[in-house]
Length: 297
Length: 318
Image 1 (cartoon, helix red, strand yellow):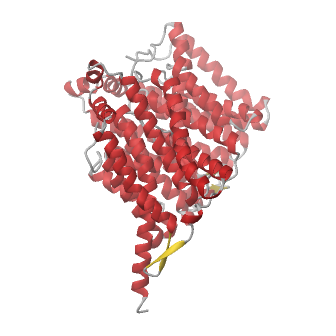
Image 2 (cartoon, chains in turn blue, yellow; image 1 turned 60 degrees about the horizontal axis):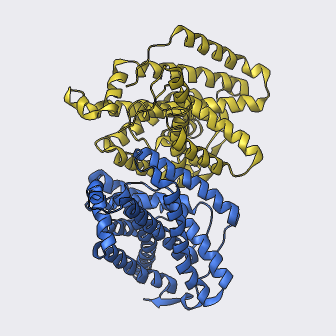
Image 3 (cartoon, chains in turn green, orange; image 1 turned 90 degrees about the horizontal axis):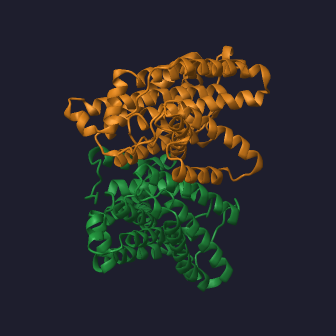
């Protein structure tokens, strides 16, 4: 009985790390959503579908090439493929709708989600797939007596890298600065002689690429199934809302709240683990309905 | 912007004919079609209840399915777990849905349009998550099957007539609300909230009342669903259904009163027909929605009314 509290503490630490690696995935997906919301002001409901496509493409490419390299190639190919798909949709259909009201844009992305969901079913069928982590990422190492999967450590490293990269892209490059300016005042940016339509295309493509990256990274950690899209998109929306719309650091904070409450919930009350993050979200929203950090709206 | 006289004599005759056809319908067709038409009416009622706030109030209610589901679950749980007479479920289900709507409204109503919608959707998914997980009480993701229905309406014919009567009564009440002074003020808020505020309208209060009304009738639709199906399941509360109900309003025409009824019926009928030929129903629905957004944003009924020169075409909501 004496060691009970120690075990709980180690389990808590392990569960926290699992929660943080979950946070990484959630952050990558929701930062893309937040970017599109912040600049284009579109709640992109099809974001989850792109995440799912990212995971399926990763599976196909990784198993096609096989071995160690297969996964790393897939990790590069999947986000780019998803980004290109998004670019095609944006240039082909979406860009004609920007003048419409928000509800129409939201419903359009919803219809896109419905179509993409069935496209995935057409291509990959209804069975679930599973992909194992590349050999060098398999197994686990010991952390205070508790095993911790190597792949999760990789995720913990990827999270900050992506965050810093995205921050640098939006704050330090010219296109990023233009995009942020367009978020504040579309007409003014156009008046400076910049083609706002292509700036929007870039932002949409980048945001969706993040969804693809999230899907690629999550592929080895869970079953790749139909319905992944429904599950992630709601979480990503909640994260973006509690963090503050369009605020990248808000997405990080929101993802951390979501990931950690979820993993603590699994430890404390497994049956209701799914409810914990929602309760955290509701508490945040009741006190700060506009999100924790400053929204760009 | 939405001017509509109370029913003219010609539409009155049309409505009477339609009602007579619906009343005689079960005598002529097989069980399956009776069931299907009953489901069309339930779904139409759900869409009409959403349109009270969406079309007439201009509020982005993105979680309407939650009230549908909560109404159904409340009725089913009262009967199964509470052991009360099933009729109480029909009374209390909608009341519970309305109370929940009020609670959510109190949190969300101060916010701007899209923010309001997204906050509604997050609160709605909290309710969904609880229903989805609380196996011992709600049956979790299996839902509840074989919910007892009062003997009078337990046969398919009985259920059909019950649904028909309740739907007609609810539609009449909602029609009166839309055409009441409250309805007019509500529409003026949709068209210009600032101006409404400036002439002394309590915008928040009106919006809250609108939400409660919509939640109540959404709950009624939920209890009717229990009557027809005899079961409830968590998908009824899921956000995808909420957005589908918005599609129904849009399809029928969300600036007309009967449009959502038509849209709801059309989606249910289409699903039944398309489902015979293909498993890819959601793709068909998605493509229909895309075409609708591009070519017919005022909806089917809105389009025909505009053609007849009686209704207004869809204005921009904001």
